[in-house]
Length: 274
Ligand code: FES
View 1 (tube, protein in one colour):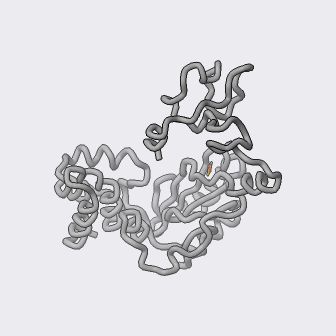
View 2 (cartoon, helix red, strand yellow):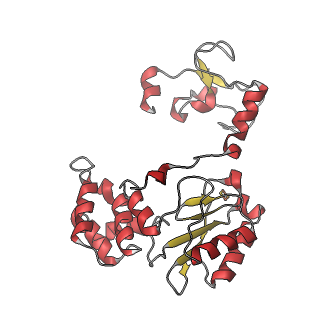
View 3 (spheres, rainbow, N blue to C red):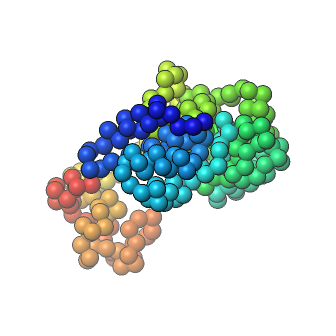
């Protein structure tokens, strides 16, 4: 679908959200906008972004080719992404991908002949606690197995929109791309559904049940007054003599005798990262 005056007007609306002189900050949402209109980032879309922002096509292309969410070939109505990174692979993610690939007759970054479904291997989708996971147009289907995944794509092929495990009901790739460009989902139900489920808070639940508490700045309950955990302090604010001997900041046991807390950073320094 060619880019229209409406697309151009929407692009200008995006640019207007940013301060004068910072127009290039609008590039990421604008690339989603042209994907919404054309199914991928075309040469025409690159040209529109460059002209409207006032940068070169090479600069736009450099961004568009860096991020995997920007597609260079047309995507179908349904972008099916299967995580095959470590946690999901251990739980059967590769087998899920292979089953869907065989079912659809397409491989990574390919679209079915009818143009409806695009399949891709995905890097970690930040949902390892639900592994193996897959998404359709970035909506999650958690803890799938080969049969469930195959059933999902069969439903998509029948024109159905199976409810994701979390979040709102499915919308098409064009629709979700427009939302990623910063335009509101017009469906009231679009913000329905849980944002997270029990596995995401399992650690918190366990800590609450066990009565575990972390150190809080200024608290005398779990350390000296004014102390904060060393891993909460920006690295540049940690005095050299307070860094564990092995240089570890978090997730590792400090060397014997090494301090594990440092005095609270000055207020001005702390607010810098707030
Ligand atoms: S490895 Fe699959 S979501 Fe993290």
